[in-house]
Amino acid sequence: MSKTYRLILMALFAAIGTFGSSLLWFPAGIAKAYPVQHAVNVMAGVLLGPIPAVIIAFVTGVLRNLLGTGSLLAFPGGMIGALLAGLLYQKMKKNWTAAAGEMVGSGLIAPLIAVPYAKILMGTSVASFFFIPPFIVSSVTGALIGLFLVIRIKKANVLKL
Picture 1: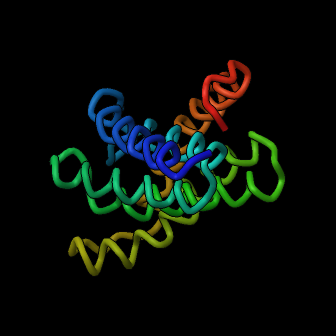
Picture 2: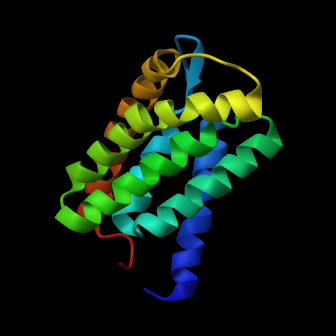
């Protein structure tokens, strides 16, 4: 895969994550669940690898915050899940491991990191259990969507990988 093709795919995934999050979301307890970002993390982790997936999650978080459709929690939630999705897929070469990595990274690890992060950058002091339920709901939903889509993309062989 050429560098240009890889960059185009990364930009496409960042655009899907940014725009898709404004279209598909649902209330999850005290927060909103944005499963599109988690689906993109799984697809990017499988199709491009862990580093491009993290870059895509970061760019999407920046764009969503600039557009007013995201919060600062998009950064730990998106980037940790993307990293784990890409690393687990890279190690085991099984599509489901990317989805599992996204669920664990965004659903369990990110909420623990979000507590001090939210305290320092957002001025709120809540316990991790406050973040875990909405993060899990969002990451599980999105990871399953991403798993379904990555299986279909690979089966259809529509990308030059």
